[in-house]
Every structure is written in C-alpha cells, then in structure tokens.
Amino acid sequence: MASVPRDVFVPEHLREHAFDDGPLPIGYDQTISQPYIVALMTQAAMITRRSRVLDVGTGSGYQTAVLAKLAAHVWSIERLDPLSRDARARLDRLGCSNVTFVIGDGARGHDDARPYDAIIVAAAAPKPPKPLLSQLAPGGRLVIPIGDRALQDLTILERTADGYSTTHAGPCRFVPLVSEEAFDEH
Image 1 (tube, rainbow, N blue to C red):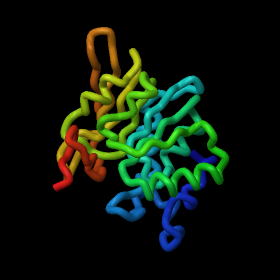
Image 2 (cartoon, rainbow, N blue to C red):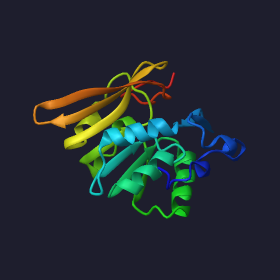
Image 3 (cartoon, rainbow, N blue to C red):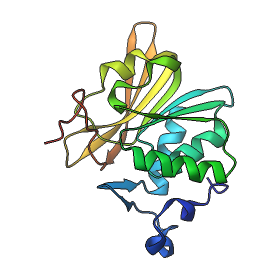
C-alpha cells in the first residue's frame, strides 16, 4: 500500500487529508475507502501474484491500484462512467497495465472473465449477490460488506467443495451497492 500514492486518488481540495485513516468523498455520492479498510479487505481476499481479481466499485481507483500491485490481473467494474474514466486515467499515469475497466452493474459481476480467485466489493449489499458467488473459482473469496444501508459487517465467503464458508471481519460502513441484486436506487 505504501507504493500507491493515495493523494492521487482524492479530489484536489481534499489532498491535505489524503493520508488520514478515513473515507473521503470523491463525487457522485461515492467515497474513497479509508486505508485501513482497503488493507483489511485486500488481506482477507488472500491475493497472490497469480490471482485473477474482480474489483466491484472502482470509485477513484485506489483499491484497484493496490490490487493491481499484488494480482496477475484485475477487472474493475463501476456503474458510473465518469468515475471509471478518471480511475483509468490515474492508473495509466501510474503504469498499472494489468487492469481491465468495465462499466456495468457490479452486483452482476463480469461473467466474461470468470472465474475469479477473489472478488472485493466496495459497496454494501443486504446479502451476497448470487452472480458474484457463481463467478468465484473453487477456493476463491468474496469480500463484501453485508447489512443494511446504515451499518454492515465485513463478510468473507470462501467457495468450498460443499458451498461457501463464511467468516466475519467486523463492523463497517459503505455506500450501498445499487442494483436489482442489492439495493434499489430509491
């Protein structure tokens, strides 16, 4: 994480707070996650140099850049085109060449590149979206905040031979995952 300059990923007027351990607004009612949570989610995903990773909720691209430093390839999906375009420009400037950007419904994932060794979701859902679970490789991990719009539990689901094993990493707060598979826009 120290090799990813967080200040590049926050709005200019908030750069003095870029290294605070807290979320910051990035526009479009979205936030850049606090560094602690990015580290926790990344660690929980157990990414290796051979991992194929789906990053749901590109946002500013900060978590995407962290994942790109660790994984073989990252597919980063964002529903808001302007955020995806800006994130792509930032990662291009940083020389991250192992990222594919996708515009779409993050709760539906990106079926074209499945299966994934890890899926990290930077938005809250009331339950794990079935399309994401189906896109996990055997032994793959889905790291996602599960709960209501106000408070969630960071949940790790690992695909096993019998289904999924679940562990919890503690309380958290994320923006809602907007989708028919998660929270409606209203």
